Image (cartoon, rainbow, N blue to C red):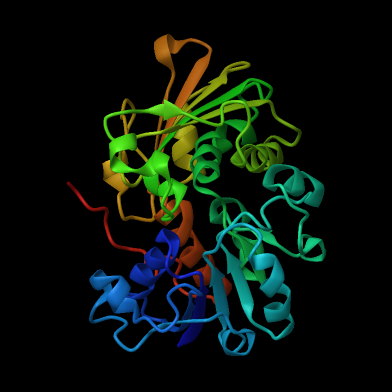
Length: 344
């Protein structure tokens, strides 16, 4: 059995890791940390996990205990993994970080967007961006994984086939994205209160969002050069889900776009290219480690529209982290992740 630890287990991504790992045939959770809830049983804080982790309690972060694990997930706020990741790596423990600490290759750009100096720039060259559909082979040999953000996952998967094939103008990309309120985290914030978020929708970060440089970095890699991207996120009154509507301008003969997408993702267990004319719904991926895509060309014009939906807590976070774990340890990629979505 692979022994894992979770740092920051009381947030939404932490409990989602516990939910997914509870049915993983090859993984045992050895430690889960929380300074605020140290000593509390996991099943007391999360009754849905009763019967799965009855002997597991939250504890203070301890490098000695965590280093006895084969891998440690960081489900923590940005900046936390900087302090512990290096020490764990030195002791032979692999690190899978769900925060943004190692996603950007440029430490100065990270500092600009996150408002503090990067705490572990020496590790950036080693960090592998954990989007399996792009970096599968590098992930297999990695010690340090930077799990992609939720918006970046949906946007990149939706635009990758078009950019890789050179079919769209990489200077004129638009990503119009919607997220459920769990994307803001579990901490109490006025904009996330029911009375504030329900029966309303609003844009935010239109002039600059922290996920923008991450998305541009990934799309630039796919295009082979820097891209121009307009990215506007929105908060919607649902608990889970990301819906990304993506626009690109075709630069020549596009051929069969449906076939292009189907070929690109034919071997990917967690990307579902839907039949032509489809409009995927966020509820169709709720609780599942799956991205559903549909590609449209309105009026056979020069604009291509891609629709991408994911669960922000699963394919956009914890499920993708478990997928990375499976690859790193040579397991079946779908282990612990093969449950269908929850409907209604």
